[in-house]
Image (cartoon, rainbow over all chains, first blue to last red; front, side):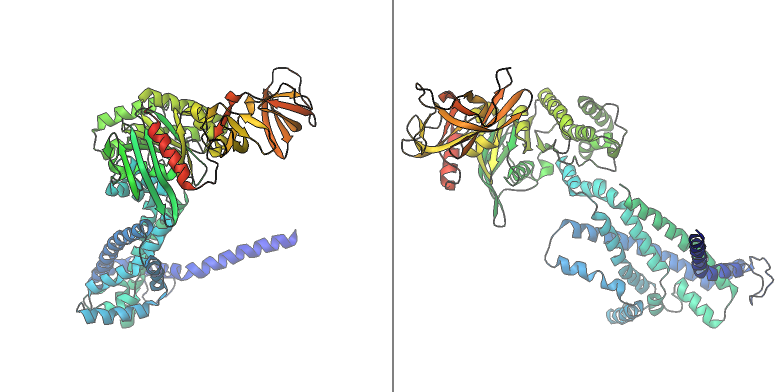
Length: 262
Length: 377
């Protein structure tokens, strides 16, 4: 009895330590974004000045909007292209299909540093150079495999007779896709889209390689700001990002649970 | 609504000949069963008629219009799938409405037709449910309503009752038959269940290894099978093999079997005879009665299975086990190990010309003759 109790207690302690390890830095940062002292001095004095001054920081605001814009466009493009690619891989057999499918996975594993370098060289080679367009193209390329993997996984649970049934009722290929197949894979498409958004919005390495001083994204701008000198404004903007990211992850979790339902 | 003509259709998948020169005429308004073991090509044939797959050779016509290169969505057919294939993201009513909706019918028409179809399958009140909230039998009905609401020219059913339990299956057989009669639609249904084929259809086509073995009414095929396969696949049959005598066959041991139905086989050729177990009379006795001529055999009961309304006797005779089914009339029952005399009428004996395992050419030659002879039904 006693040992069971001790084990139970240790287990709880472990969970507390684990959560502390994960969340303490974030909690401290969030707290500091509301602390008056710019040098992390205690006692804690409540203020929202840093959020107010963040509002005055045009560079940071511009970078934030760039990030949001790029993330949304990346999500739209990679979700549409990725879902179409998944459908094609699901429906058709063609030469080199296996090779193509196998080639989808390595980009996920290749370090972003290397991908970023390669993209920089490539974009200069083809004349696109650096800037927001280059960042957008880079993000779409990074996000595509994630979307294809997630949507394809969902398609594995699709019953092909449903498409046949729809066709036997007179539906053409477009109607079959829009009214039968797409509704079924929608949870996968949304989850893939959230992945794409996260890959783009959180992207630092590749964005860093492809940005120019005027055309940059939020993570790159934060990094630049920290190098110039740390201000609690960074805490403020980071807190906002954390809130947005966590909301997205919770949404993703919800849609993945959706995927498990019948 | 329309008849379906399948003429000389062949289809191969790689080296496998799934359909080999199959011709069947499905008359308008008929209820037709395609019966065969798995791998016999019955589903492949149904998919050719549906238009999911196209034949390598041969032609398919629906209502006199050649369709063998027309894709399924343009064929105006209705199909019920083995696992129902209801759209999980739609309500029952939306499932049924699908075919009308993709055609762009006005909303009011759709609502009216859907309700009529649901009423026909006795699910009028369940339109708002989701497929996963329905029982197997109800899903089956929804699938049927969805297939017929578009007023297709022909209704195709792929083992539609396969997933239902026995009691429900019998209910659905009756129900399906009622609905088919009510709307008078040409119906082709695939099954491996011989009882289902016998009880439901006007005509049966038996397939084996991609070929049509025999085609006819249930009574015709049961009473006059043209091959050992047809005789044993549709119902039970005792098969005797020997040499044709002109009016029957002579078994290797000299016993003669007289047959007054079936093929005419020239004397001396190899032939077989099929006798249904319920047509054989069984009586106790060790030796043949003196006056007995043909169709009398002796044997010993090796096993008896009592099934309430009837008993099945397995009778051993000269290395062969014969099956005899006797109705429970209250008469004296025979015991296992007892010597018996078996006797049956030549009218109950079917002479079969071509034995199974003979070269393909001969059988298909025989079949094509049969098909050209058969009139419309």
